Amino acid sequence: VDAAYAPGDDELCECKSVFERVIAAMRRAVDQGQMAATDPEVAAYFLWTTVHGAVMLEVNKVVSKWDTETLRQMFEQNLGMLRMAFEPRTAAE
Image (cartoon, rainbow, N blue to C red; front, side, top):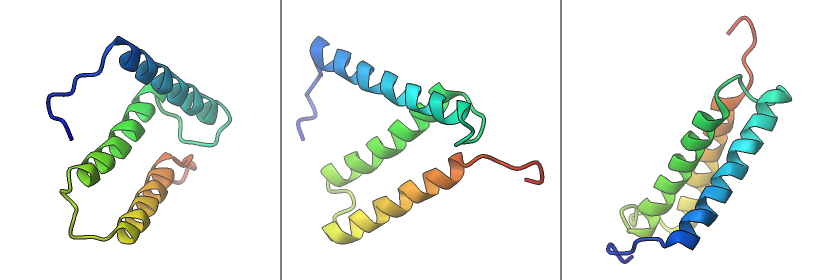
């Protein structure tokens, strides 16, 4: 990993485009009742930072005590936790 790396305008534009698509997907999920009513931009940011954090920990070998398969399983479990966090709530909850 090159700590001095700084994305250029093209890379930043592409990242913004991807982020806008994530926001749109969150908005659709909220509108269709597939996830809890929340601000789609906040939900997209939460998702993005969580996934990015996991990737950076792995890329920087901070989590090197676990093998690739264990990390994959843990990531899948993390995605499941995110899914549960975003599930629509009932009135009793």
